Structures are given as C-alpha cells and as structure tokens.
Image (cartoon, rainbow, N blue to C red; front, side, top):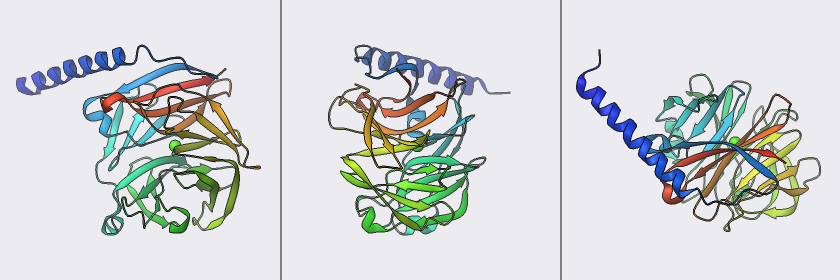
Length: 281
Ligand SMILES: [Ca+2]
C-alpha cells in the first residue's frame, strides 16, 4: 500500500506535469509547418523526464533508447513512456579521463552504441557499447582518433548493411569517418559533396545516412548523405526556430516500409524535450 503522502505527491507531480505540457504546447502553437515533410506525432517530455533524453535517440523497432548528458533511458515506442534508466552509465575508466557527456546513440543487434566525449578539452572521443536490454555497460569501449574529432564525438551511426559505424567532426565537417563495427578501427573517410555544420545525430535508412543539424537559423534541416558517393542533400526543412536546440534523430520503417523520422529537440527555454515524428511528402 502506498502512503497517503506518497499518493498526494504523485498527484501533485501529475498536475504540475499537465500544466507544463499545456504551457509548452501553447508556446509552440504558432510554429510554421515543415517543408518536404509533415509532422505525424509529437511526444513532449517535461520535469525530470527531460533530463533523461535531451541528447541521443535510437530505436530497435519496439523501444526507443535515449541519452541525457549523463544517463541512459529506455522507452516504449507505443506510449513514449520511459520505463528504465541508468543514471551512471559512463565507465569509471572514462570518467578518469574526463569523459562527461553522452551524445548521440545508434542501435544494432542488441547493442546501443553511444558517443561519449570529454568537453571542454575534447582529447578523448569514445564509442561505448551498452546492453540494450539492461542499459548496462558491456565492458567494451573504443577510443577514436582525436585528430578526426577535435571538437569531440557528438554522435555515431551504425550502418548494418556495410558493418561499419560513421562519425564526423561536429563543426563544418568535410568528411565522414568510417570505422569497422567489429573493433572500431578506422577504415577510411568519405568526402562530402558539401560541408555539414553542427551535426547532432544520425541514423541510417535505405542506404542513406540522415543527420539532424542544429543550424544557427530557423530551418533546422535534416540532411541525407549517400554513403556510396558522399552526396549531401537537404531531406526536409523543419522550421522550428532558433529557440529550439536540435539534437539526435532516429528512423524506423512504417507498415508500408516508408521512413518515419523521430527528431529530438530541446524546447524553447529548455522547458521540454520534444520527440517529433515526420513523414516525407
Ligand atoms: Ca541516433
């Protein structure tokens, strides 16, 4: 049996949460529509939930995996509810090196690949592997070449078809870095047809790498990269405004096999974290 005070506390929390969700939805009511895509759903996270998922997102078709700066979370894709968290996932040996920030995530074959960096020094970029079931550290982590990640490693994306993982410089990246998925050794680089700035996260779908970029304008476009040729295109324009900070994205196939893009943003004045779902038009 729960005590009366606990029940009262939970009811107060639910009420505050409902009020916050109302305020946030009012703040966002005048946002313009996206170009090249339509919004099909939006999940808003407020109060303590927004600390669990303000950096990274990936999915396995059934669950979302989220990162905050210092934690991991797992949520049901049907409800969006976060039901499992790991509040101390950064391995001790990485903390000793100054690693303090979990960025973008990418799921493959029961493993969540996490980009972890050591700001503001950015001397030790790592990819750390977590058990997707438990969110616990698997004991496997790989330090990446620092000269290819001079501003840290804000994201990573697994390409299961090619058995590789991609990263890039955060600012004005001219190439994608390509690592073997088995042991994360550097295979090479893919020159991009145009530099991409402020990349916050990515995911593969249909042979293309899709990237969420925190552009310093109101567009906040999602770009696609053909990983065969390095050809860069704007996939769609989100039009969410400078007040939002674009974070990682993930993609899944709908019942017709078409992509659904789920993009994380920190909302205006960071009152919420939004997971917005888009379909291409
Ligand atoms: Ca991702």
